[in-house]
Length: 230
Image (tube, rainbow, N blue to C red):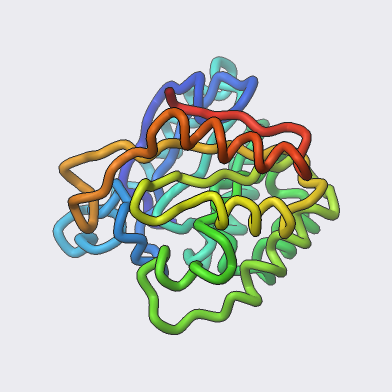
């Protein structure tokens, strides 16, 4: 498992848990507003962490930390992700997976094997604008739809979340998302935060009034909607 960073303590990344966050490298999306560009487009310039160092830290802290958040990049691209998750579970950790939803078969295998306890899936935009938002001209949206269906079957607690960008999202997108995700467990809006590491600079956060309007639209079909990160 190639990891390129570790946050040794977080009270935010895993809801309700004292956790550490591990950053897997590589992603099959090229979201222009992504603030982890180094993990997406510049991996050749970064040395992965030594696995012995990571495992030694996790072993040492397993009686202090409650959970591990595995994020990226896109963790499900790693061929040995299931083995790594199994090691975390064997240590006694509760595991949260962050995913873009592009690998539904691997997601289902991991859920069926009981290797994760919580999943956060990014919803990049309405289905009609997905390719534009992820920076790919050609993409099989069926994978995203399938991953949503898998999570909404309720095998583990989950959340959907969208990073809201003024230039990429409007009310019509959230009306479409609300219809698509009708009855979802919970949904979070996260306003875009600018960073020197954004893949394509020049994007902006939505106005607070816009976020309020989007939240009101979503609450028509998703009871538990909130804004995170403000």
